[in-house]
Image (cartoon, rainbow, N blue to C red; front, side, top):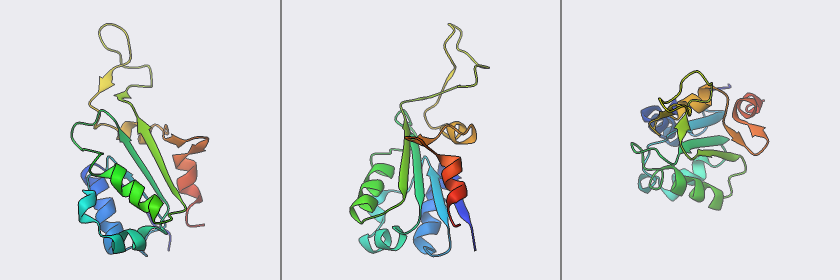
Length: 141
C-alpha cells in the first residue's frame, strides 16, 4: 500500500497524530506548519516513526504555530534517533512569488507567515538540490 500523508496547520497536527497512531500505514509524510507539541511525543513514538520518510516545512514568521515547541524539537529528536530520510524547508517569511500580487509600494505581497502552504502548492520547497514534490514521488517505490 502506498499512502502519502500531507497536511497543513491543523492538518499538520493530524499528520503527526496519524503517524504516531499508525506508524506502519504510510509511505511518507509532509507536515506543513505542523502544530503537534513535541512534549507530547514519547521517545517510543519517535522510535516508531523514524523509518517514515518525512519532510517538514515552516516559515520563521509564523505567529500561529510556534515551530520552536512543535517542529524544531521533533526534527532534532528524529535525527538523534537515527532517522535516515528527513528533510526540512524553512523560509524567512511568506510572500507572493508569482509576481501577480504586490504591496502598494511595489515589492511582492507579504502574507501572514502561517500561510506557508503556498510554497508547497507552488512547488518551492527544497532541501538543497532536492525538490519536495520529486522526493514525495520517490517514496514508497
